[in-house]
Length: 106
Image (tube, rainbow, N blue to C red; front, top):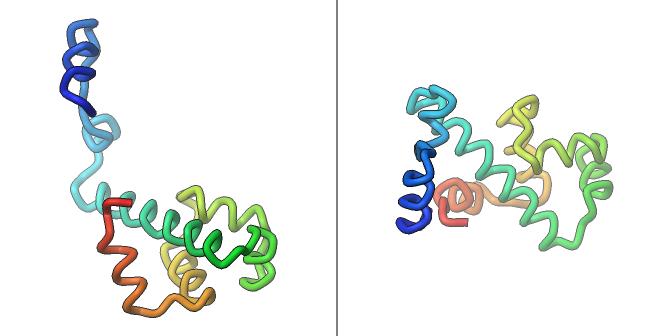
């Protein structure tokens, strides 16, 4: 958040903090949430780059379009295992998967 925006919010009486503080997460829980979101974003980006619809990816995974939508949204009901298996099913190499996880700037 920009410093000027933060200062403006604080002057208006708002308390500015992190998601971790708001939800009372431990560092490990925060890292897990971040990992889920990174993998979800990577799945969505790779699906789009391959020109696949969610329905087409669902058929490839023998799943449903709604499940793919949940995977791409970072839904907590989706396991990390499923996210990783889905990326690998689309042809993502282990090296590319490591790059997805390491790239926090996207």
